[in-house]
Image 1 (cartoon, rainbow over the protein chains, first blue to last red):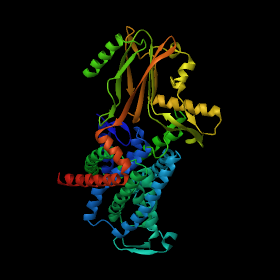
Image 2 (image 1 turned 30 degrees about the vertical axis):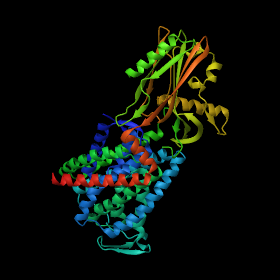
Image 3 (image 1 turned 90 degrees about the vertical axis):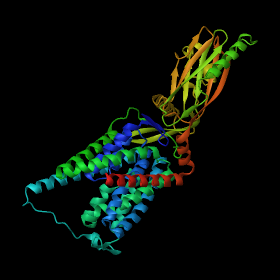
Length: 307
Length: 245
């Protein structure tokens, strides 16, 4: 069943898009991740223009994160003060990111920058995931092995503008969460992701937040930042395809529910290794598009602002 | 459709008793190409009549707009977009069909004059690159357009029945650019164009697709807000439904 996407200006199979949403939703429900970092490259693989894939995916992440964010909010798992500081950073970062995106698009380098960002981040995150879960898997079998220190005192704790974050039981410089927010905001704009895969580790290891509020606070930030990205991409680049986003949303919410139920039954390191391997596989596939000799070294583009 | 065929017969009967020898009547199976939700490409039928023998050439030229051709270069093992050339007012779509190979119909000069044939498409650039390179970029533009099925040449497509009736199909792929198209039919006799007729053919988005597209471009901030609201409601609704289940 072909459906014409008005902004992408192409015709794709609606069932394929629903299935894609379902599959990524399943994985994101099972592993408790956003899924944007898998969806955007997959959309590009099936021929959606990278700029449209990124803009639309930001819109889809809004839908994917909102019910989780609400659930955590109700349970009191959101550090609002921390969330607001992260959010201010996120607004600055995503506004900067969309501006950069528009500029890169005008000089014909946006596809390249998107691909490189994906290779870089998926590569780092995938390797870290596999290494970390293998290590903790070994630790579980061999409890006498030395543990890493949980909290290290570094120069980061000497930064000015200290703020008290009661919910997280932290007294740290506001510059830290602000910086994390800016960085994640830029990623959200350029890669069309929520950025949870960067923000969650940063909150745990860099800010030292308790894990109980990490997911809720990051979802809180993601909803607003991806909404900002959606708005700015729509205004500056007209690359948000509502029809495409809706199909993906329908597929992914259903997939996420099934995935969450399956995930409850198989927790543990093996699952994290599996996710790490999926991430690395997508990374390798994107990397291949960069190094493989193209069929035609010439390509057509339109002047920015004309779609 | 029936009305159109009737009209054709009327014009045919006029032709039969006509004073001019080089009459040409042409019509299309549809007066526009409408892109709606289920659009996955379209094929239009062009049909017409001539009096007496001759060769038919049909050109379909899409809206003119600037096209950038970029060349990838290898940098430290990675392919990156490097040099680019912008061609001004290049046709977004170009189709040529003929009743026999173009060379057999008319001389190259005549064909070039009429801009018939993919090699005859006028492509201007203000790029300061050497001419030899421009040729490469020009060829790349045509090659890429052909692989996107937006430029096509088909010499065997036109069937002429009894030196009188002819028909030709015009394929439009799903990625067809919107705008005003011009369909021109040429009648050649003894290597000379004796008659031509041009019909305009709009290709446009209709219905929901058209509204969404113009909404996204003309009222971008509101489009953005609505995209966000839809996502928020859809996400929230999904959460509510599945919590109940």
